[in-house]
Length: 178
Image 1 (cartoon, rainbow, N blue to C red):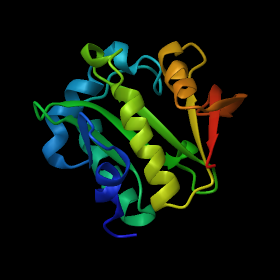
Image 2 (image 1 turned 180 degrees about the vertical axis):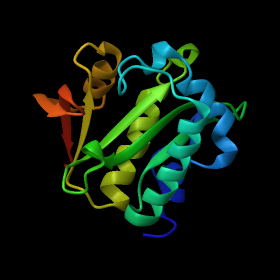
Image 3 (image 1 turned 180 degrees about the horizontal axis):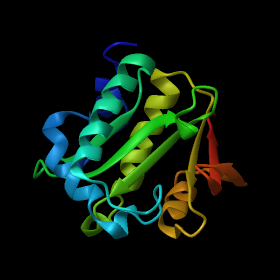
């Protein structure tokens, strides 16, 4: 699986506005800006913005998961400006290897409503199906996160109801490979 993390963009996002790069220390400032916004973070974890130390730790954790599993977190980078506008993942739900694999995303607020989450999620789903050989991919969110639920529906995912993930009952969706 070595090297497949670098193929997400090329194989699954034709003519994209974004490139997806595995988390790296070079992304620190952009990820800190993203994760420091309390509105962006309101439906994630306890809803608190992350500290610089936590951002460094998340980069290190993502790198280790890339090595162990061949998938983890990407930064979403605009081609035209080089700006990090979001982040997303392919990971086991709750980071438990026995759980199904999910896709997830977050975007800077000034990039909401422009199709970036859908574009990046399609690339990550393509990676999960084509590179990892998965038959299904899940997505979870807080039931009040209407924007993410709209993206899930736009991707063709179907609801499997509220499931007990991440310490709450999470709205859970699935997309099966056809």
